[in-house]
Length: 299
Length: 299
Image (cartoon, rainbow over all chains, first blue to last red; front, side, top):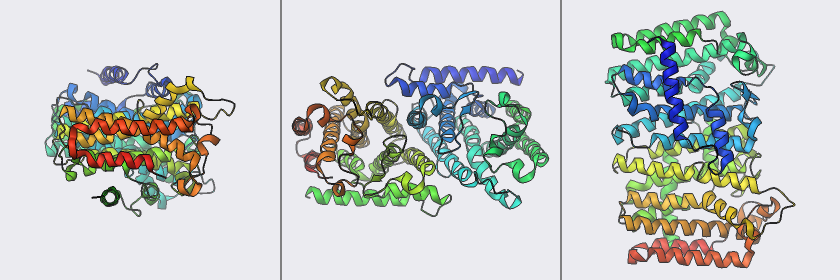
């Protein structure tokens, strides 16, 4: 199946599952459920859960067992976007082409909607599946470590601490900080996604290790591409104002290394990511195709 | 052992565990770990984890297996306090006698510290213990449901929606909303605490049911007492300004029913809570003593 069809199929599967799982808009208290659904169903690409499904298939596992666990990653991702957009953080008024959660529902509800999506992710991760309970505990640990103060949250802390000073010019001495932000703010969830998929598919140790290397590299490449797109794409393509990273004086890959080096680095990482998958022979075609798709995306 | 000694012993055990478990102040990124520890180690009573331990003992379980799970409740409780104090929520400058988290670390770090404590709670809940993995998944589900949009967060949503309108006079028609706020904002974590302790202690169904009834009633009594203390205690005793609920025009038990009826209701609930424990004969002395302590506390 060509990749576009695979992505569309899996996106539909994920969105159907999430729609069935999450409390409906009218469930009491309605406003919190409306706010949760508003951001969750705002046309995301569902890349993290798709990666978990594809990794599970690559090691010979079944989609059915991993689907709920994969979907929890989208809840974590959406919570992080809502909180990152808050006035006290990046103060972004738009996200995915619509007003950000706090612009629509107010700050208090936006904070609580993020909290609730994060909590719901762990509720979902702990519903018994046909995997062993011990394996499922291991998967919850992966998700919690990725989302925690030394993962996603750590990346956001550094992102905030390094941005906003308009007199600061970034240079190569900022490279270690930049790498920390990228690998933590974005990389950890990509890594967790493919690892969770592989663990659920009962990957052998060398398979898990190869998949982890792939996840780390595509996560970093994804963020570098994001930084480039912020500079090159139109506001309409991005769903948020063009150049908002530069306006906020964010520590980005192009800001430190220049846009040409950023493009080359992203390409190189994706090639290396695909080489990590060579041990799977023909079984990781989808994961390799996703790497190619991430490089050439325009949104 | 007299209750004061029991509470002091268990509080020490819990704080030692949490201190050993949480990333240290200097661990990178240091600011987030400082912020997490600042609020977590700000002289809490550790009631929720103590209740989990006592419930586990009442059904014949061992403290050792339930301690990490019990401590996760304190992480959830502390996260909820940090987020509740934010300017967009209750806008409280003081908590437990010291500046609230956002006054000390700024709003962005306070939001992230709350997020990180919530995430860390689930990391802790998923570390394998000597309980079966299936039982542990069940405990994670209890915690996630209690903390979610139909638990703790639902209570906070209603608390925000009903407060702040200084022209509004509360009356008996607000009683259903008040009960929703109390049972969700406070009750759910008390209920989860005793249930988690009882489940970890392998409670029989009728034991779990009795303990749940007890947890619901003391949770509600605790919140009613909190409302009364807010009116009666000094700022020093409370660690936050006296009368702050009234100033924020909060929907409280005394505001709807008057202070005398509030006192009687609280007493009645605690008596009923103790009767729920009669099936344990002598084994629930500590839980009964805690009910008495909750009624007579001054902080």
